[in-house]
Length: 362
Image 1 (cartoon, rainbow, N blue to C red):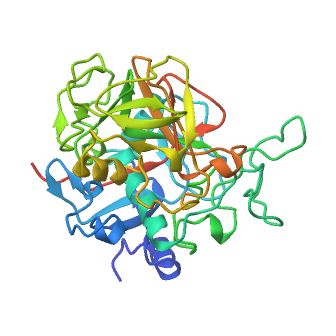
Image 2: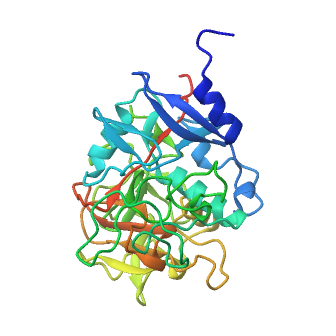
């Protein structure tokens, strides 16, 4: 038997074959869920057999990505995915990103592209997860509570709960081997997506998984999206890039358009299901929006279970978090989006999740 035989990892693989214990460059473990490469078709996004962009990094397809099984804690300035913990909170976007990137090459703050892939995966499989969105339980369940991990509020209600302590319905695939707490508990900061005065900007494919590509406010990696073709554009810096996708506010909901209307520095909100596009947005651009979980694919009423959508189309920069928190009720879920706060925002109900990808060789 090899001296480095990993009995802990073997035990985990026996119980949950898609789970692995990955070690950072300090030899510290995190429990991760391996997600093999998927196409748009496999994720329920039409008939295309092209690989979903979450599995394309720096122009090269990767065979797998690893997502933290649990919302992360921070120890020694580094992010870790461990069960039964009070998830990290009260940290801003850049602090969350730094805790992930400190772990070594390939480690990163979970990206919007990865989140979108998982959300669509759950939708296609009929396993959109429940979670702590109703003070210790899911608003659709009674009798199932997770273990509290912080003091109760002034009304004696549970707030944050310990990672992975809910029922199987809180797993992304409804199995013990799934990703836990994607619905509720704490909102999760997302890498690689923002708005600038309502113009939606992303990183190419899943390039936000590479920490060498800056996600600073002035980084040249940020790209606007062509409404007609879905191609990435160099933004003009003012949110007014010609032909780019903008988050207009029309008839009390977000409508993607290449022209702005209803712009305001106040936060806007609507149901995810009501978000749509005008005629300036072409099919390929719609597919990209769907790939990142920012536009519905299924038009069936109620298909997205009441998930809510927040955005701001007037401020200079707004970053995104996803999933919902312990008090969001039916508005929480894998298609919940919160894009109305700056990268400097902190709150006891905002945390994060790290991910890992073996970066392609240059």
